[in-house]
Image 1 (cartoon, rainbow, N blue to C red):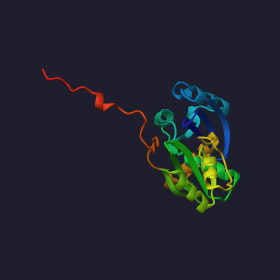
Image 2: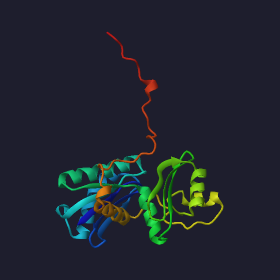
Image 3: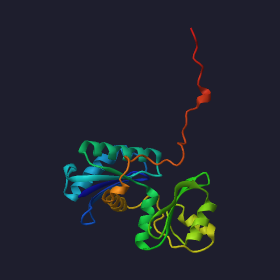
Image 4: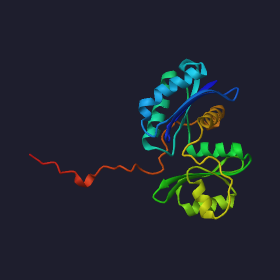
Length: 230
């Protein structure tokens, strides 16, 4: 079974094709955009399919990063995954960025607990904690730096994500640290998506963006003028 993985959660517009049976990546295409995922995603998908020597008809499932991450990027990636899955009549699978970051860290430090932490600004951290068996024990949630430091110390965890070095510095001790980016390598999303596809118990509802807090831009209701009656 070939699986297509899509990640638009951060600065990257990343896609890969993954052979779930052989457990290997067949081809990928990655652009470091920052913004503009909507304009480039379909071309990136086509490039990945070409690199893998396959087509849409050869796909059996689609995995997509659902966040936390870029508000617009997540909507682009999830909408594309759900649209393609509907057209191709195949499952769409959501994978959180925190799970992917933790999983990538564990490939370097196997058999360890992992804490994925993203700097969310406003002195907030988006975090998730996974035990030695990669079972989710906390989150994904919005929390504080002090709470994340306490989890990291108590769990002797590997750290991953954009807040990893900040957590280590605040704790005043040395931690093993995995990826410090805002998102994981696209092959990690593919691998986790394939595992979720194989586990019938984990197949749930259609993927949707994981927003741990509301959008920064909100309607300025206080400036709306009252409608005049004739």
